[in-house]
Image (cartoon, rainbow, N blue to C red; front, top):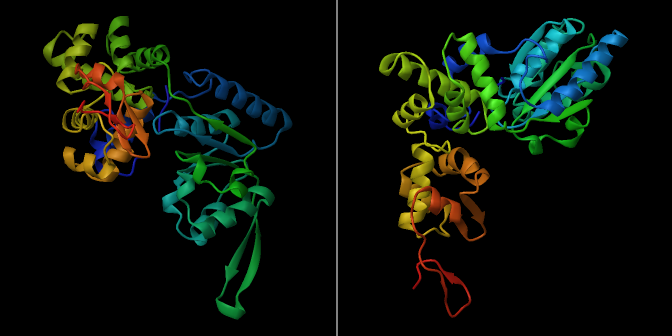
Length: 356
């Protein structure tokens, strides 16, 4: 079980949003696995990382710098803490947006202990001057601190103790190649299969002292969008429902009833997701329709639809992005129980989605 921002504030309020709020952070701290053996899922990443850490320990050296990429909530922060634990080293946690000047980074780097793990979340959002300073720090364990301004400015070299940088990013493509190439180990975190999420849910339920049947865990896992953070959040909400409306035991029926209250359907879609699909199907005949028009139809900002709702809908094969606009797939019509308009062809050879 494992975890880890969408930029829109409405995303954090969604039950199926992958961003972590304060409640999530507090619960995750209690539920996080402490070593690689406890970590569920990401089999290839775990195997490769285990080799990297074992080899470093055998050499008595610090581990290579590690870059973890993938969607929020898949376990990047958890893995960084496991790396520190496996190496018997302390960990320092910060984020790219918090480092706006090279001096901010220099202050952090100069205070690191030998072998310490520095976890830099959302590393792609770090300022360019700090990024350029990081190149030398990662490669030569040295930074040049600039003292003074203008022609009289001088660079004072500052030696750093060997350390391990663990960078995490949700957008690996935004990392410049010189930075990406300085990581000795790079791993991409994949979305989880339902069976893996069931294991996450059973482990979390045990730690939270929640009674749950296998079919109850399967019901929650199927609606968790492949993300452990969402699975744990849904588990907590279903637990609340079971305690108030039932005897505390989570069965398939209880889980389904609870998630119906929270408007999370059998495929993991919530109110916003369904609103986008319904507007696309009912108002625009399945598309194509422009993003701005679709956003107005559902009463949301363009960025909210594009960054919060669309990624999951596209991944589920319910919506397609085309040069002409957003288009619903046959699966979207089937999911909402609607019949698509009769397709015909107009004189210009383009399909008329309204059947006219």
